[in-house]
Length: 137
Length: 137
Image (cartoon, rainbow over all chains, first blue to last red; front, side, top):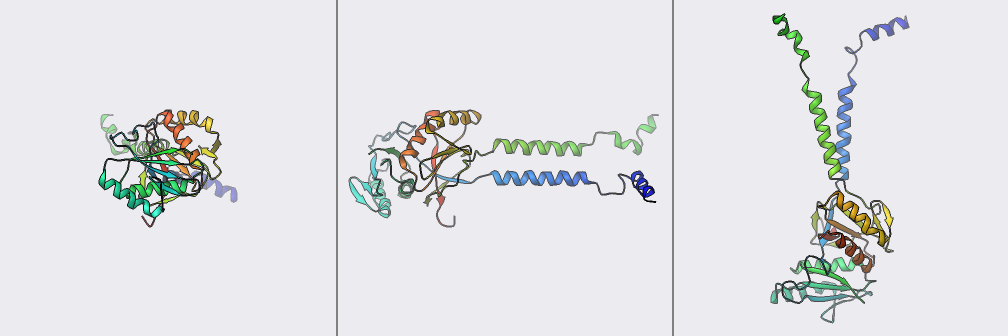
């Protein structure tokens, strides 16, 4: 009896059972879709130049405004210690007088990158996008 | 004979376009994946926060700098001296790359500067420092 049933099913193969192939195709497509969307890493960043790059410091004919970042976290603009929140105002003032002037950040080797990025952000907020990053001690 | 060839029964002799379309679609998706595959760095770092960040969609070349100065690229830790060769290889694969340095908040600025130099020496001009957007943007 059992054998007979199997035989019957075999004979009716392909017409009665659910066809799995299109479902498999669809699942594979879904899988690929999710792989794509997971791989698209959204990266946000701030553009910074290095001396010797395409944009030389002071390429616009103006010497750059130097900003020093010390290892201890102090920020110096024209040899004056300023707070991080005051960087923007200082940049705005300089930018209003000499709009073509770029900014040269001279950071100490041990200075923290987080502070550097915050300073670059402040400079961008002040309206200057020509930022060059150098290290020195 | 001639009449029989045009009867509706012989309809299933023509090429079925549907599977070919599926296949072509899969090919398209496959090439989409391979071209946009981001080389992940393999480490998680705490990024600095910044207000004015730009979205780097073609920032495929990611270099991570950890808080202790370790450099990670393509899911492994590398020495500063091997970095140039690796970047060169990745740059040849996709010459229109832009580079994003994913540095930890507390990473030393000197290492970041040297990594930038290595990237620049390969010929990549568009280098940016990764930051997380501040506020719900």
